[in-house]
Image (tube, rainbow, N blue to C red; front, side, top):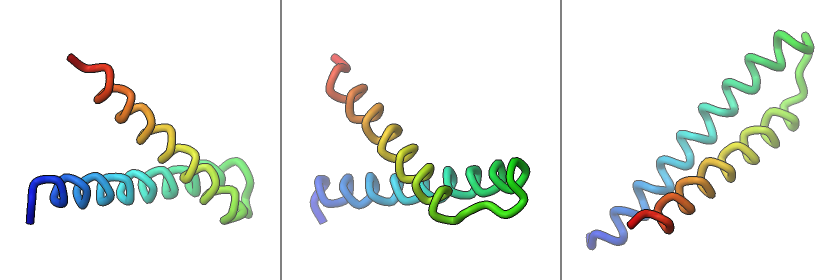
Amino acid sequence: MTHAIKAAIGYLFGLLVTFFVILVGAEVVLHFLAKEPKVTISVFIALVGTVIVAGAAFYRKKTSV
């Protein structure tokens, strides 16, 4: 495998882990706020959070010298 393929796989794996960490966190918080949380809200929060984290990482990589 070339370095680019390994980097892409690592990046996608990192995004997947980030998604699940945010998803679990959202589920825990929503469980305490609303006793019966909606799964779709948790997935939406995790998706938006993952996009924000990925965007911040991409911006940081683009602006680094």
